[in-house]
Length: 116
Length: 109
Image (cartoon, rainbow over all chains, first blue to last red; front, side, top):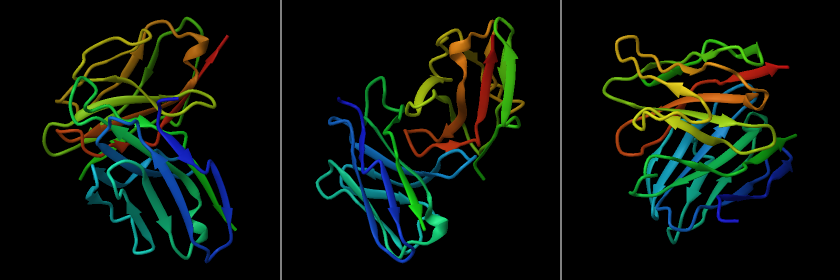
């Protein structure tokens, strides 16, 4: 499968625990995005990487959230001291730097986080 | 402020009837507009974008800068069109997407 993959697909954790999600973009895509989607809402932007550089972060991304893309390939999103309000679907997307698909974002299946 | 508004959370039409999903946006500048679709148990995927000016699966959308709208239309709905539809915008240069809240379209047989 050459699409965007995300792991785990589901995560249940207790309040106060740390969680880490992984996203593997389409291999030739330079850009990688993280979004969060809560029930009944559209995805909301969290952060964006071009290669290994984190170019933009949303104000939604509190100090408890950190994202990395150390080698410009896969990315991780960590949430520290989780809160019940963090329960959501976390989506990853990637896009190429140029070409006909340059402004199309290809989405992964998402990681559903439930904080008890 | 960048904002996308989809006024209908739910839309239900009969098979063969025309369908229009509304989308209005707020953006200072010239945005790029998109429609993304999510079929049951599938991931979010691009349906069409305004710069391509193409018809996909019988759907079209015209960017109306005067009314700041990008409504999605199809003249004859089919049952397989039932899905969640999201309107989204981005600035020039493949930046982040700003999504509307989505419209769940149900096509009744």
